[in-house]
Amino acid sequence: MQVVQDSAEHHFLTLLEKIKQDPTGWVGVHFAFSRKVEHGAMIGNLSALSGLLGELRDDSTKYLLDVSRQAASFESAVIYHFADNDLLLVARPAGEQAQDAFYAVFKELSASTKSGLVDFVSFGRDMLGVQKLADRKLLAQKRMAAYEKLSDSNQISSIGIRRQRRDHAVVLIVEDDRFTATYTTGILAKNYDLVHSRTGEDAILDYISHAPDIVFLDIHLPGLNGLETLHAIRQADPDAHVVMLSVDTAKTNVMTATHHGAAGFLKKPFSKDRILAIVEKSPFIKGAKSIVNRA
Image 1 (cartoon, rainbow, N blue to C red):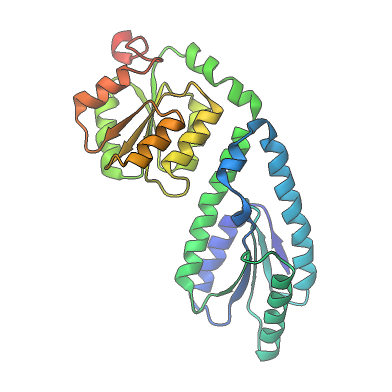
Image 2 (cartoon, rainbow, N blue to C red):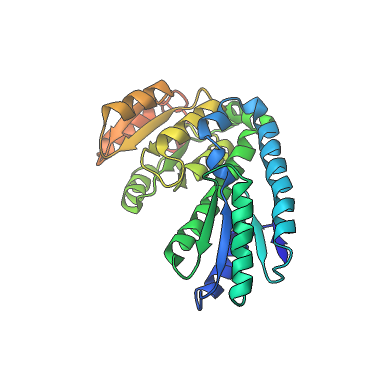
């Protein structure tokens, strides 16, 4: 039996490619401890985030030992300990007796775990679902990296200082739609340094790393949505100047975004003049940092 903790998401993706060639007999047990983690609670108090992340990892590590003991008889089994603290036991029990034994392990582990957190996985019957699980684990790995960065008080406290010391303006565009991202980049690239994120998780990481002067944040994103991302960014930097992007301006979205500190809403599609005017309204830019004025 093998336990994979380092880059578990990528190891699982590689194994899955091999299994896809012949998924017959491959089964798994997914312990979805990440379902207990609520984003708002995670970022509600950044000073306590590091301790919370440690507690989550300690709890899942203890459970990993139990799973390892229960699955010890399956020599070819692999147990994945993902970054989001989920566990996945994967095996290909040979023969009816071994298959029954594996299912018995699943039933026992399921009975000892909170309802709704343990799933039986049949690779042969639900390969599409397993592939989606692999994609979610890759995205969850980024989310945990974002939480780790949010817990770094030194990086967080230096955001404003780094932004102030810089002599050029940086615009962060958070957009998973390629057309909108390309269009926006084409407008702004001449005058500003640009950072492009495709997910909310990437946006949090990029915001802390680059301390942008303004953020254009799409509401509809894979993984963390725009409103959840806005909340995290504003928790890290209450001065963040964030403008939401959306094809609609639903009242509930506007109200939630305003509650979490959004500076405004920009409805897609938008004109060149409109987005340039909004950039110049950022209190961190107002023409002073633009490359065009610096030239």
